[in-house]
Image (cartoon, rainbow, N blue to C red; front, side):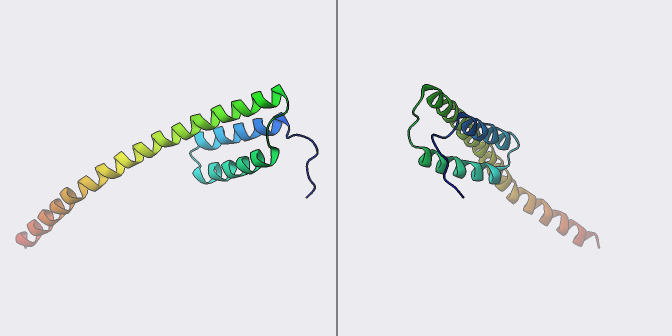
Length: 108
């Protein structure tokens, strides 16, 4: 694979931004993680932006990334709440099942 000549184009940052948004909206965490890793590598390779338009594209990407991180934190909190509720119901479900089975046994 040949090295890219010159600075990373604005379109590349826009494609990363679009891909991050699409995978976050679809809640496809595996693809989102892959795009995030590719984006990090591209950012490291590109270094600092050299033109105002590159800086603006990178800032837009950073803003989108921050929004997605916040979205993921919100989704994680929702999942933790659901798991907590599920775990809280396990004792009640086990007691119900035991009561139900004991009732069947007594009916015989």
